[in-house]
Length: 504
Image (cartoon, rainbow, N blue to C red; front, side):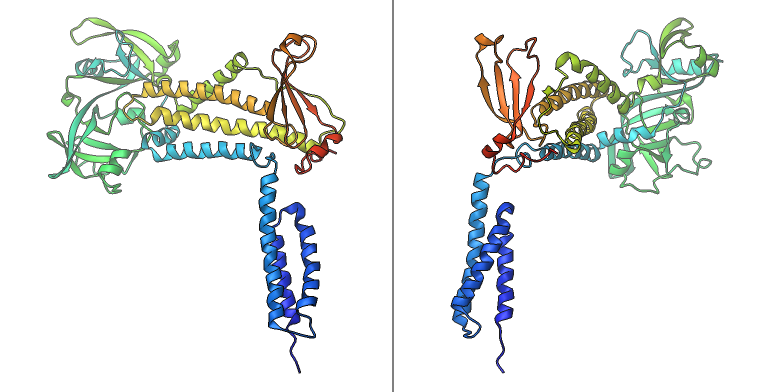
């Protein structure tokens, strides 16, 4: 009995040809598969018939199958050279959306990786209590400069008040902090009255429960950045005794990132148990309005006359803390509204005239076009938000007011020019395939501008139509016009495969 290997070899050869056909461009794949299959039968009959099996004949058949791979590679190279840059490749809608999504991802990644920007992203979790106000000398318009002396604060604290029912005071200075003889760092310390955090309702993590034993010592509260960098994110940090300057203090907890909204770059807060121990230098005062005073105030900024330590009176400016500490999201919304209002004054809003063609566009094609426009707008807004935050808070040396101005200006500028780009990009795309229009050509003569149209003509490489852009807008040709091409043009775009799509 003689074994026949012909079916086994035949299956292997067909598998090789099927694999080679997968390398052939799609429009020609079926034709070449049928061609190779028929030739395989003739080659096997001539070189290795079933009645006369030989290894030499099988090698020749195998060489034929391997030659099909060479043909497939040649066909692929020729197709790439002849291929028209369609809407699915160069200047495609997908590439545009992927680029915008990449910008969103990069800007968001920078915001998460940089501590200053990340703190502002997390700041929305903290809400400034109502009826809090900052008091400063009326002679100074800059609220980031300390103007209230400690003696002035003590006078207000001791007097019976009708407008305020709570006061807090703090000063910012650079002082050395050491938790061990060989470990020392110079930090921005805010020496404050003990009721500062209660008045601001700041969330403190790992708060110490040993208040009775440590009541005679100042309490030190660390910022989130210092806790991570200098103390190794120790969750049991509360209760540790450190030296701040020449005094000892007990660590009482950690402030969440993004919670501090007051002037001054602070790394830690030293809460003094007695206001008499506060230095006599100038600082900042935060006060809480009584319910009656909060109802009677007319605006977020108002003046008052109050006594000074020497018995005379002086004018002071009260600024609402909620009005001063604007959240990044509120600044972003304000800038976006301004950009949308300024857009009609800086660019033309119409997208052009798109006349009806003999072949009506399908509803899915029209929906895809407007969805593409909406998608660009939807991705533009997070780009504006994250990029403006990165620009405003990337430098930690800037004060809060400067960062707010940078965010406001950058948000407005990026949003305005981004909206202009979205409209201009939409005008330069084919309404059928959403590909970028190419091959601009000058048409007409300027001297005949009022007799015939004069401007630039662009074409869709998929063969869907032509775009006419006037050089000088006139009463009869004021905006660009799209002209759909009829079926007679299909012969000029045989390899595009897009002329017949999008119609019914």
